[in-house]
Image (cartoon, rainbow, N blue to C red; front, side, top):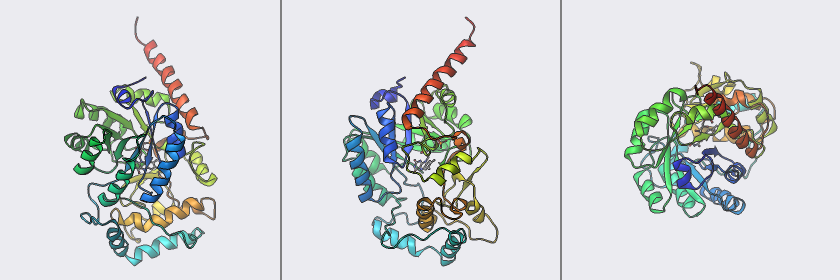
Length: 373
Ligand SMILES: Cc1cc2nc3c(=O)[nH]c(=O)nc-3n(C[C@H](O)[C@H](O)[C@H](O)COP(=O)(O)O)c2cc1C
């Protein structure tokens, strides 16, 4: 089942797994696809540690690293990562800090323990560059992907010079066109139903338009794929692979507390919302009292990216660490797509991959059987 892009990368099946968990990266790559590690929440030191582990466990397989350098953000132009963080922290209004803290304490979310205060969030060019520099020292890292915009020209050139591929996510046709013009090697086209940052147009509408608009550039289909039937629908539109994010969140290898896993298994496809309440840009996540609280007229509006992310960094890490304490799930940050309604059990990454491929073949047989002789 190799597409041209698979052949270029040397992978067996066109399944691309976006994840923040190193174990998922390794398992998906070992099963014939490719794992891409989301690095936005790692400091350079932490990323080095994660990549050391991946390099030690992945054997001869390859992987990718994903950054999130937005097209536009507060503090743009500041090239010193430390100064940027200081400036952003100082710009967060006290009223917002108090509101966020009250939401957490009202729901019994314990404080973060003292002495573990590193804030690692890389929503800028200066910080993203540090992560790319580290990724490019790793021979098994064969692709860089950027979310939220076209990567800076300097990074595109740097990645190409190193002999690797570089792509970016796009939720709108005009973003795909910009990526193509900038010389990217592929586009990850994400429809509105996907988890994380997502636009307004659904996958079924967006994918075929993107394939046509950026041809012959390879497109990967993201947003709304959790079964082989959905994978077949995507492949039938001319994409060169599928890019899944939500499906790995409840895999055996993912690092998730039992209460968080339960939230995914309890949720239906109607329980997500696109909200600015955690990162400052519209992202799809489980709807809860936190997302609703930031929507009200009598509460502060979410700040622009990356200010809201710095404001909510503490909420994110506390609600993950203490997922089962008090009413944490009512205010937890659980980014996930509408496919959450299809996540009803814990499966290993290998089983997910095998299931996708088996269901794909069965669905293809069904469709083929409809053709007259
Ligand atoms: C928990 C979570 C976090 C995400 N964070 C990022 C990110 O940091 N960078 C990125 O390129 N995409 C991110 N995404 C989007 C995924 O790369 C992917 O496009 C999306 O999950 C596909 O839709 P699906 O959720 O229906 O599979 C995230 C998705 C999820 C579910």
